[in-house]
Length: 143
Image (cartoon, rainbow, N blue to C red; front, top):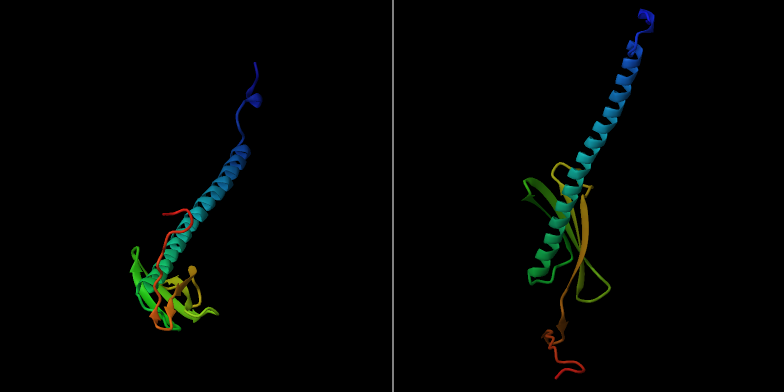
């Protein structure tokens, strides 16, 4: 029969080392979870900023007016937070075509930063006698 010097089980040092290994592993897991949560928030904000930029370009297109070369700024409430946008309308080498660059940032972000930057174009068709109209007629094979 074995004596007390042959008892089975873990020593205190083995338990401390195993606990330290588990703690280090858990810290890595918690950090990965935290990074994932931060990435989700950042991607959500980038998506919202992209929608705001797209909406601003669409508003300019639907206004019915050919935009002047200019820079405008504004702010709005969207998805429960405050956003700032700037739109720059520039000439292009094509007459009757303007480029619109919209930058969007969150309230509190530095003014020179942007979560989303979107470019769009708006055109005006015109002739020497006034606005052009396009009439579509049937092509080959149509009656």
